[in-house]
Length: 277
Image (tube, rainbow, N blue to C red; front, side):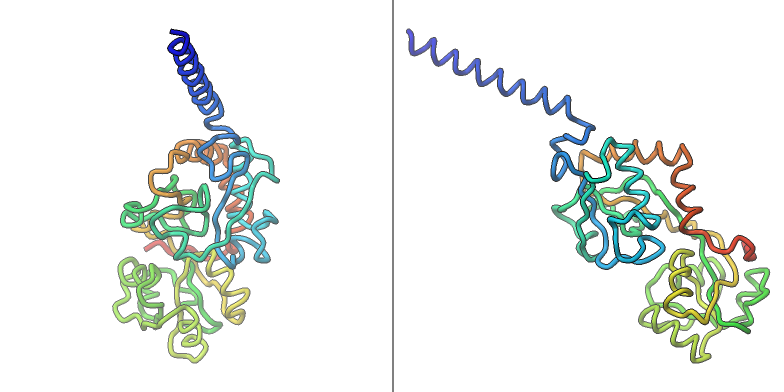
């Protein structure tokens, strides 16, 4: 009889301990101590290796200098993390978007939200959708263009399989886009006089005209591609942290914080012409 009583006491103690553990986990949910974090007490964020301006400056996510790392630190603060509770994991883009387990809570790397990707990874709401920029050398016929019809009269180039090429064909209506293996090839063709212009997302164009092809310039701004849903934070598929992070991101959007960061880091010359049709 005593053995049975002791066994019941042991089972009761175990049940109590389990209940207290679940209660503690429930109490910590949605806080920096959430047990669902990759490392409770830390917000682990994946990003590129390397990273580029203006998304992140000087290949240093930790600096907070740049649009995406500044956004992460603002988001971390909104979620209750101190700055020193943010740790970065550097990965290639292919590693980041691949299905399977992730070594981060979420990743930020100009990752476009697409239905195909959403089948194997999770996404937050979109935090940024870029305008397109027309990039050209001085004297290009696209300088002074005021309509898509004007733009169609020029010779265009784009990298194969990119959203830039799809934009030129489907939005601007260019029918004979010259195709190159990569963006470097596009810029080389422009320097060689083989094409008059190309398009890129505004942040990409800012970097390109500052570093890759500084003799070129952004000569006009075009509207975002309606078929491009924009950039979102990427999670492991089914990650239960998504609602918590998304709610914090929504608050930053509603407060104007995200737009302030866009205005600081991602805006081209406000005097540039805007061509919409």
